[in-house]
Length: 259
Image: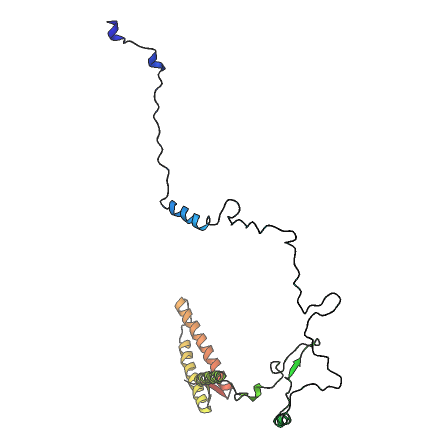
């Protein structure tokens, strides 16, 4: 009964270590262009790279380093070179020095050359201009002192663009004057004749009589607002008509605007 409930145990079951799960890493990334880059680097940079001195051929046995071989050498003496004492070893001698009485050899002049020399015009120096005390000079033509522009065909003439601009300004000025003249004619004043002035005075007096008649017909007792307003309007109209009448009678010369 006890064997079925409690199975047999062993101490070795606890001493044997359990195997740990091995974690596998993914493979490292390698570019597919790596071989081409390595080859290009070797061809461009490692072509002349060496370990130690460059490989050169060994010298011949008879060309060993001799004494004073690296010292500078003087040029070899020739036959014409002079020795220390001043004597010349050259076999050929130079021509002797000419005497004082000998005439130098010159070019033979002909009659034609003489005629050219007599007829030729002497050369004139180039005209220059000195502008500073230190002697700095320049060509006179470039200095601005030579009046060369006055000999041009169009010197002193007004350019075409200025003539065009002047015509446009003149045309604009004429148009402006024409508009101003029209405005002055529109608002111009005309003299009022004596006959017309008398007629206006008579009309104003008739108007004053009519308004005054209406004013006299107002009731004596005015207690409403409408009647008071009417009376005030009539009084103002009478005063305006009286001022106009006095104005036309006082001034003999009157100007009025054109209709």
